[in-house]
Image (cartoon, rainbow, N blue to C red; front, side):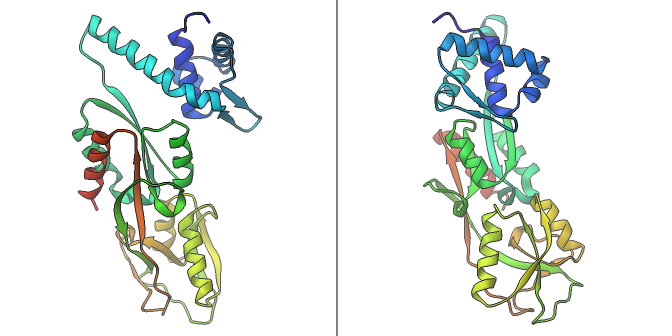
Length: 278
């Protein structure tokens, strides 16, 4: 095997992080075809395939997932040595995934607290669905993820418990016996499945009034009076209220947010940032 070129390693890491040759090229100032050529050169030098390509997606192979952390380590070591020669040390990159439900409206304050607690790190934060974030964490794409326990299979560090409530705008009216207009995320969301299961067990019919792609969209739909949503109590939007008792809806179970992290000192900082902003 010949020497590994840093430019090829950087291209591979960018593609792995973005899942796209086009976006990786945009981040590195190269064309999609140029990035593809770099990945092919790196695979030839390694003697193994790093990425599985299809018309709709780019995924890491098992070898690529194992090699990703090595590539990052080589890049970090190279940058650190270069910085010591030419000037002050560079910050370490910290890739952190956060469930949309976990952050809620406190995301800016949480990120600010993390930046203050981890000054030696340069944060790269992604917000998304718990199951997707956890899958990417296992593949080595994140150093830490804060996700809902019910969405994943694994044992992490419980950060905090959530009180789930039924919420609607203060002006919203619903007549018992009519189908409950449900405001929720897509079918992949465990919180939606929990809400649907609770309603079915109580014998309450429901229909989709709004399906969103994030907590912000759910909050907006509820505020607009489109229906009733199952949300964490701290994510009840302004102008809305709990309506479980008012409409005699079944009690929702508690849920847990869990942290998966590869380093203890980073885990302590993340847990502290979240717990300080509940």
